[in-house]
Image (cartoon, rainbow, N blue to C red; front, top):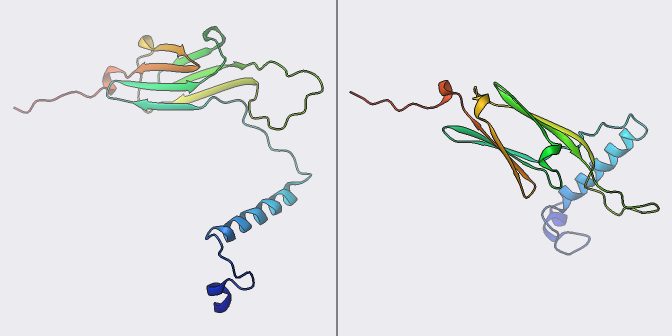
Length: 152
């Protein structure tokens, strides 16, 4: 065993440190495939846009990647504690008899609901769509904004 570990017997070559992990991952994938073969297919999560949510002292910013979607095709709903963005991504067909080698762009309806940690001002929300990026600026409610207190 020690001889094999130090000298990589029987191959006598150098191995990548992660080679054993790669082999284990491949075996686990094969095992998982064998276990789920013939089982109920997993439901896909749908066509979700990639979304970032950030905040500063006064606003939340929701940015979503929506390439190819026009602003009039979006439905944005605001509640006192969150936002919901929905729409439908349409991708033109490739034609009959086309064989895909890779298919990563999906078409279909999508909906993202995001809960925010504090109350927001629903009357002052602004949204813009530029170069396929939806940016929604959501002001925090007055009770959630930080206040500067002076010490006397």
